[in-house]
Image 1 (cartoon, rainbow, N blue to C red):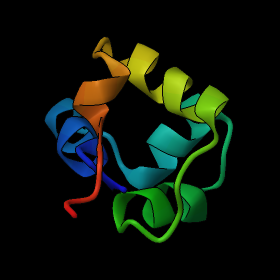
Image 2 (cartoon, rainbow, N blue to C red):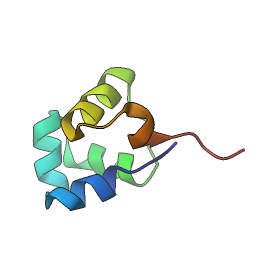
Image 3 (cartoon, rainbow, N blue to C red):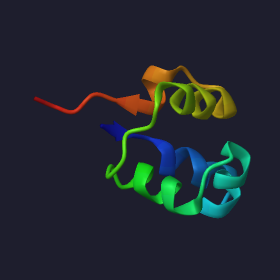
Length: 65
């Protein structure tokens, strides 16, 4: 699944570690999310969208078929 997580994080000037702290996950999880190696659970996806004040569909994009 593609996402805009890195773009949103960088706009706020946050490091991966700072975002991880706010989401209560590891920095490695944030890195895996940003690189598309890990798809978040639904509760985590909602927390991320809420943190950035964006709809979940804006943050997470379906893979192109």
